[in-house]
Image (cartoon, rainbow, N blue to C red; front, top):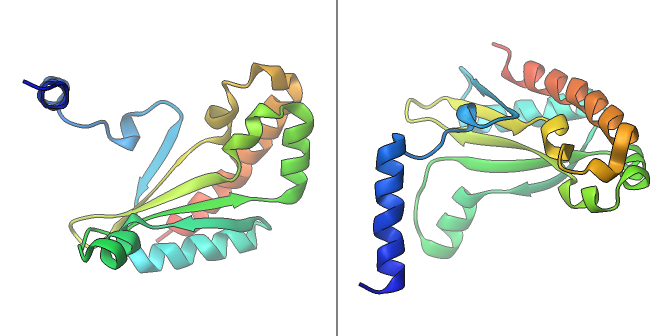
Length: 159
């Protein structure tokens, strides 16, 4: 067997032994909420919640749109929305230059088979945890952002 074939076989065996691919709900530092909202509706609700909580919509990426446009394939709804604000960016960079790669912090919207959508995100505290050089300043910033991201998520996922 060639190296890539061996890798594929090993990957399948590892996933089978582990019970399948990891779900976001099982990953440390992640918050996951299955919602009653459809995929497009949840995107709009996240956009509004970000605005209402005085944060900025910085980036948007969709495997769904890319697969359709570039490959002619249809896959379930999948979008990543990057959220941040300049004052948080300045404080983050004052605490840790390396932590800058983590901004913007992202929400992940996925379409479920039943037509609803799920909102997932890695908490800012978890995102910034590896950057020990940031010390208390970065930990305090992350804790502050945890509150903001929780408010956005609760507003967006409310029935």
